[in-house]
Image (cartoon, rainbow, N blue to C red; front, side, top):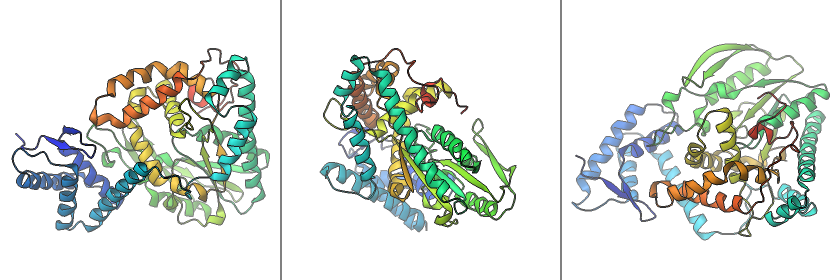
Length: 446
């Protein structure tokens, strides 16, 4: 029986010790530098546990920092300096993030599109939709259909503007990238933009980068068995670049096929070639991530970034978090179309958010244009579908030290939805609405 049974977290909570967490942390660091040997990560984790049990006094519960120090020591002593560096950098990054949250400093950052946010806030104030209280008042006056029309008009204007900018660079732009975090509305926006560009006489050829996922067996995962699809390192970035270069040179390539049922990638599957007037269209979480298209000159790319930049204050007087809007969208969509339990979406969301902060948000302002996909009318729609779920999750995870993230998100979203007036009749939402991508009833094929 192992001598170490529990560990002290930074919050002071005492939780069961799990060697798999060490294995996964080592493997994640290895993946970041190109390693894919999980058995090696397991052997190194065994060494960490051996040292931990040898050096921890009887009756003492080790602290998480003690374990991480040993991990660094084992990696370096076994000649894995690059993995150790990745592990140290990630650990330092997390520490700085915690300090930043603790300070709650209100300072400017290059990662936030301030100009776009100001435009969205100005629109919200002009349309009396800048607080949940004002949204409720308009709904109670029977103006839900008007809110839908006003919101959709603003969103469609954004896409029209983006299409015009692409058309102005006709002949120069060879790749259009539509990027944005999970459930930001990339699929619907891609379809709408494609239609507008086609009207401009531009021919678009989609490249589905999801087919470039590595085999699931080499993906990082946590102690709960949850695989991390959210990191760009889950994609074969080198092969993506190789194929993009070849396509732009007029050559034929054979795109891989990724089978999500088996978690395996099949190489050299689908032939693809583009004509001299074609534009490659990429819809990807990590479209702005530099290594995704590092071998292609920036002049040949048009980068579009999407985010639900809703500027509305909730019942606590704070602006509603965009990540919470996307969480609700993904829950509803995954439950309806992917037979995925909404609770699993909640439990997985910390991976989504961590990857966004590391691999998406830092590159927001490298985009050529930003589209706001936030819709004020989605809140009453989500209340009817999710309020009771969130109420249950708040109680379920209230005292679970391993699920603090899930509890805090559930509590915050529950408080928000509780304050929103529900809407039962959704007939005012048109079939081409972005929200239909998530709640169903769209006129588009996804």
